[in-house]
Image 1 (cartoon, rainbow, N blue to C red):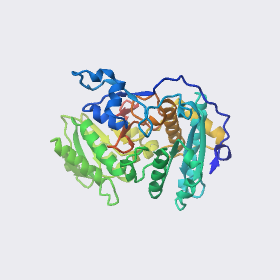
Image 2 (tube, rainbow, N blue to C red):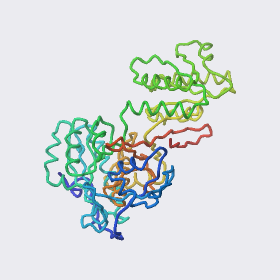
Image 3 (tube, rainbow, N blue to C red):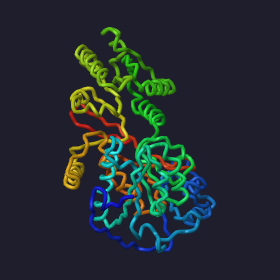
Length: 443
């Protein structure tokens, strides 16, 4: 274990801000469609009696829970007892104890990326210090070939309020058991297999598993572009993993009774053109994310557009396409490209520029030119969860509207999975418009 002052950055002394005390602590909940009093009470680990007592209007015989209603949720501890913010150990009145359990080393790319991610966390702590939020950071190096139980045996690990980690799926079971035993919140920052999410209420998972993301993306694509004519192009890439997406997307189209056409890069110009229509916008989808095939498709589309100047063509791509942005930006605008992504990195924004300058000043080097930018990711995660803990304590659930935060790169909006943990459901389409501008569509 290394303290913050010994690893990467020396921060100024932090201080704790005093909060106004109430007799009972509450959080607000905005009622969603089909939610019930029983279901909401179960979601927050309280009884229906406790929920009704906090909202006296529910006692009326003709009361009906409606979508959009704001109701009060009483904060309770793990034994169901009311919590008030006069509790001596209230997390909102003291320094938040943050643990980081990731590979923090220079041995391989995993370690180097996680060092940059951790540096982003430290910069977030420095930002929060100016907001009156005090953070005590403890970090453990947990490499892939290491035993995470070594870190968990450190007495200071059990003192954490929240832990960020792990990076590897094989470390998940031990860490899940540990946080559940000690009532510690756990943030899984990157995509790993974590079946514990479905049973452990203490877990936040930032990235959805690949199969769930594929299903969600296909469903959203079919819904958002329901008035388009889909054209799916077989690019002949035997190494592609995107066949799962196009197959799932086709099933969604068939369920919605949306007609689509299939074509191939090997098709003649005449047969290729037959897959497109003139009376509505065409949505082109490839079954690969590779650059060579993308270039070939772009060339075919340019030929088609030259012959049919009134034809409307848009493209729905893959997150990997953002790696080609430097060379394909003009084409992305020309063909009205939409890219689904769990993040958007606008390195030219004011806050991004400020963070890049701070990073350079603090660590005497630039961020790695990768997507996503790992320092931005660490910054977003730390600001979001630490602000949430500071405002709501251990009852923070990451739901939309808990507080205002404009992410630098990674939007976060969590929903509970059954009676288990919480998963980030925020989703973006990055739209490169023909007028040369870009927009992010939260979907």
